[in-house]
Length: 95
Image: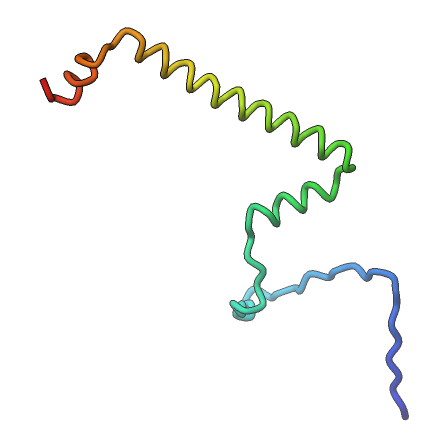
């Protein structure tokens, strides 16, 4: 008998291995594991959106982050406005 291998261009569903209760799962090989990084997670979520939706979400996140930084800067300047050089030195224990 001859065995021939055929390749298929269609994706096959992934089947989860079934373990019995008295059986231990096989040890995970550290070389075969894919590290979970923020870039990997972002690519998973980005693959479910269109490029237009992804651009819109990215732009919104950028503007929210910029607003956060500007508000932090504004609060810091407002808090420092009442203090002069001597006030800052007093806080540091110099005077």
